[in-house]
Length: 98
Image (tube, one colour):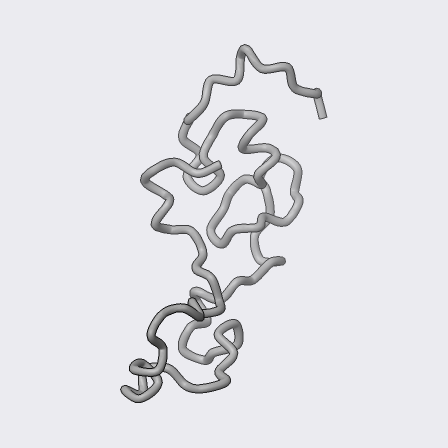
């Protein structure tokens, strides 16, 4: 659960869209053929690192880069998982106490 402001901070997909005209980008030299986007040298900051960050509440690993809360804790509290701002009023919801 992410607020509108943090949607642009979400991780990008590692594989390019196969339906785009990628032949022109290959000819330009901007994309290499057979390059593994997850292991690319220049994109170490944007690379998905699953064990780097942990949830502030339950200490489980987060699925998004730069996330402070896991999806379960963010939904339970009604907050954004990246910045922590209140998004949803969960007072009327029936949730377990876990």
